[in-house]
Length: 245
Length: 245
Image (cartoon, rainbow over all chains, first blue to last red; front, side, top):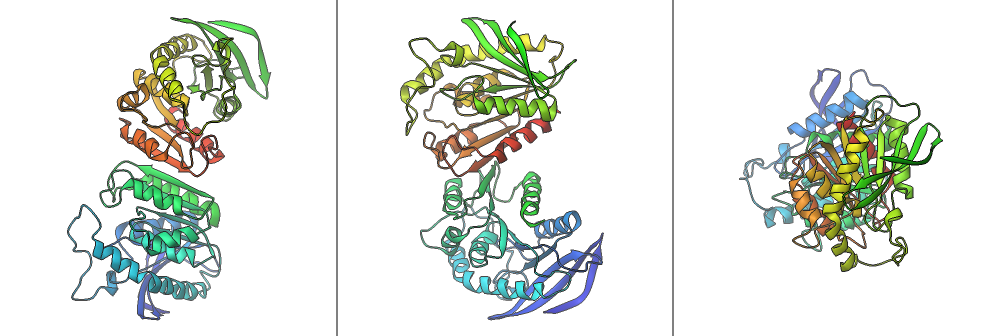
């Protein structure tokens, strides 16, 4: 793990940009920890949404919340083709608003699931080797693309004690997030937006029902895909803390 | 309002059986208040489920919880044909388990919605005249039949500041709980069981979407109709308290 540049410290939160050597190239990430942290603590991996990146506003905000309120370590890496992994010819973040998820996007994320699981695994191992992180309780939080790529990772990582997933549906009989969901057994909070223009609520309900966990709950609110209310940010924090603290 | 028999006091909760004169006969109810209560306080009306009654175990338990934890007043009345209003020839509580709600039951409850709204209104007025209740903040909690009869009541009662509803669906285009739901504007917590043998989750989702309230959330869990977990009892208490305390 190489730390890139100097740490940035703001209101008690240390933010460090890092690179990890993945099987298929460099994996760029960010680690947030409490200022002056020493010794192990719970770690939450956060998966960002499609067209976003490891430091998009809601990732940054949620990471800082967990560090400040709970003293956790939080890390996020760029998804394949996103953030610092976007190819120059295919910049992310410039997709026009859509009334559905393009099939090509669904396919490309499905194809990337195995390598993203491997990238998360390598990153996790390197993070846990840090004194200020350690091998404490592990959680995962990721919605939308963060569930498409996160469900397979959580399924492959029995260390994960609890996960917040959602804003995603079954879509096709065979895709990595649906087959992954069926193999998850940790407690899950699953978030749904009932006016989601990208994920029909019925398909989201179907993905929730597919989850292998017996300890699971779905929280739904009105509003479009990107309008998850603060109430569920708070519920996410409380839910993770219930299992990690 | 006539109190029947002596109050029963247990662990700080006073339970009093009462009768109120309704438009279409006597309305039997129970009021729970803190021991030695004086002066006004929040009041929560609880609607029981089909084949149950005003003192069925989960009503009693939730009422005592709100009195003990929050110092609220709580009241429940028997639904039409239930509890002390059951006709001798048609005792309630002896219906065999069913894989769906009988159409005759749906029709009978739909037909009873207006008179139940009137009964609740009369009861409310008499309760609010008591010194130890008063005209403080008002909440409603009722699942299943407690939503079939409760949604029309809440819609007709702008004083209700927040309501917990659920375990019910749209079923038919025209029924009082669906048309009532559309006219509700207070904050709502709506509970769903995704393996509900009586209410398909898709119909429950449709009823949630029908709710007129902009401030609403749906919480769903796996399991059958009657298996609402303790987590949602706690969430119900917290949600009501957020708006009534």
